[in-house]
Image (cartoon, rainbow, N blue to C red; front, side, top):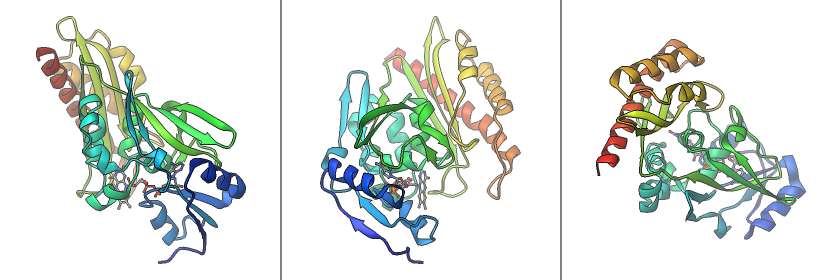
Length: 293
Ligand SMILES: Cc1cc2nc3c(=O)[nH]c(=O)nc-3n(C[C@H](O)[C@H](O)[C@H](O)COP(=O)(O)OP(=O)(O)OC[C@H]3O[C@@H](n4cnc5c(N)ncnc54)[C@H](O)[C@@H]3O)c2cc1C
């Protein structure tokens, strides 16, 4: 298959790209790694008249550690995140998520900005953005705004980005020394999107009681699902094996996954229970390991 005819633009600065977007509006699409957009154009699911290639804009390719957070430029490739020593230290769930995305060739070109702007509800970076309370930095000709993750993901393949906006960077909180994390997923074949994925961050105090907790599920709704109600109910609980079973089964009962040709709703519900339990066990183990170190 070949894409419909389009005009290709390669701006060298962000301002130039924003001017083009303002000029062409709905008729234009930004292209980053092209790993999702090009297949969509080839099967004519996307037919932009103007393609604005942002790969020549250097400012968007940096990873910067700030006070308590890390800012990742929209053009940073999955592979760079996978191999970043800085991120392995400050925010290890991100490299763990990156190395699970698709195949090597895809990770070499695909960008974090493209993955987040695409907003597939089973994708790894939207899951981690929801877990890590990410802030999305969007620029248009009118200026810059920051959007929190709970507002950014609106529905399947839909975000709060306006047509004239470019996502320039995403800010994730880093992990504290007292926190442990876990990430589990299930896909039928290596390289496929997960049917369901689950991630958790746990901080313990008072001899093993939950002090802080974050839990998120992917593949069970139109956007990643943060389990805020269960998080609040968990504070003060003893992080025992029994509690992990209880909370995972409560999560499976509360979510409402859809069924499709890949998996029934009931199968996805079972995966939620299994994967969340695994993510919580890993988070608790890592937390205890860090406390002991
Ligand atoms: C076979 C296959 C398997 C895959 N498996 C997985 C997987 O297991 N897990 C996973 O998470 N992902 C998976 N992906 C998706 C992959 O991660 C893509 O790289 C990613 O979704 C898109 O990134 P990109 O840089 O290639 O974006 P592009 O394809 O260039 O763009 C995607 C969309 O985002 C928009 N966009 C891109 N950058 C910006 C920006 N800075 N600001 C505003 N809009 C922007 C584009 O206009 C387009 O609508 C898979 C894709 C394929 C084809």
